[in-house]
Length: 184
Image (tube, rainbow, N blue to C red):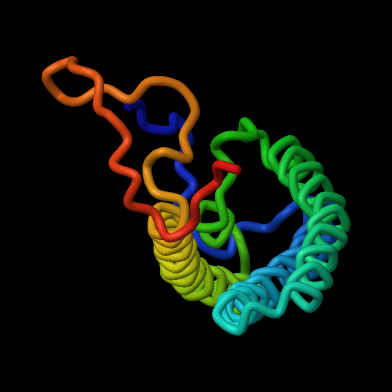
């Protein structure tokens, strides 16, 4: 991994005028990102609640809202990436070199504090989002497993089409041990 060739550790370096305006715009975009992650956390919580309650109508409404907001958020992501490219060009950096931490070294107070606070807030929220996402995945996996178990209890293993083979390669006959008989 190569180190940057220029020294960017000097604090309070003045920014070009265009970069100052872009940093202000970046703060607004980061605020939108924070609101989006907070909303996503609420949606995941609501999604789990609706799954447990088995409220299909509310679940469909929530999923439609999540999809609409996701499409709207794509514009924010595009705007952030455009700002990143423009700021990198203003500072003479490559796009992949421009990070919030790197940008903080070039800012004077109070802008540095504002950007650092948004960076800290996003780190906390993304850690929460990872946790909530994992919890939602676990719930969905448990629901799927429970549903498969119910289907096996009602229809038995014979509800599968085709031949079933055991570990030794021998065919397994149907046990006929299901709660429902699908034969007429």
